[in-house]
Amino acid sequence: MADNKLLVKPKKGQVVHEVNETNSELSYVSLKVLELEVNEAYIETLKDKECCIVALTGQITVTESDNKFENIGTRHSVFEKIPTDSVYVSNGRQFGIRADSEAKVVLAYAPSAKQLPTTLISAADNTVEHRGKYANKRMVHNILPDSVTTANSLLVVEVYTEAGNWSSYPPHKHDQDNLPEESLLEETYYHEMNPPQGFVFQRVYTDDRSIDETMTVENGDVVIVPAGYHPVAVPDGYTSYYLNVMAGPTKKWQFHNDKPHEWILTRD
Ligand SMILES: O=C(O)C[C@@H](O)[C@H](O)C(=O)CO
Image 1: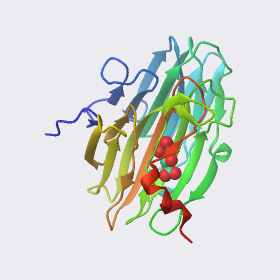
Image 2 (image 1 turned 135 degrees about the vertical axis):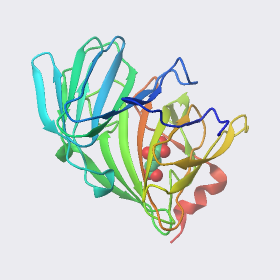
Image 3 (image 1 turned 90 degrees about the vertical axis):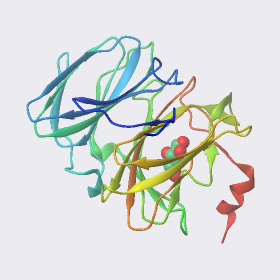
């Protein structure tokens, strides 16, 4: 049994993950992962948090007041490697989700005071980025990047890392509220692997090593990054997927690379 505050294993039931300020060191980011049977419903009333509902796999219908987004979701498995649909819902609103097929749904939350319109973030709205070279290649789907005004403080991205590659690498952090040099963003990682018996390694460490944990992460696990660098290494034979939720006082992803490893970026 892992004795690790930063590694969270899935539970059985509809809500397989629930990470928030009451059970973690996080104060900005909260996360739920739902597994829904066909026709199963989920309802939530948001208080002082905004929420991004990501149709991770399967199809769902999301309702909020007069808004109804039917049969959203584009893939049976995240490893189809195509973007999916999401819905942004503001603080103070109630939303419902109905599963049109067996579905997995991520609910990403961040504190919010100002209400914004409920918005469908369709798969086609995701920008797709290919980053890195050599054994540092990864593909990113930007669901809620810092460049869009759909949300007040939430950032949500999906990252694919092929076998033998590293991502969130060279190690970077964003734990100082010191813009324009660095922003303070907490982060969560929801991980899957293909094939599912795979595992990846993730290290979370700060400059002073007050946090320094290297975790064996399995399919369906969540890793919490309250602060520090957070690189991921993927073994041969397996593809890694993770969904990142980030939030902090300012919606800006301004990271700081771990200087001794920054040379990785300057290779020919
Ligand atoms: O490797 C990447 O490019 C993905 C990471 O940047 C990941 O989204 C992250 O660590 C965000 O801070």
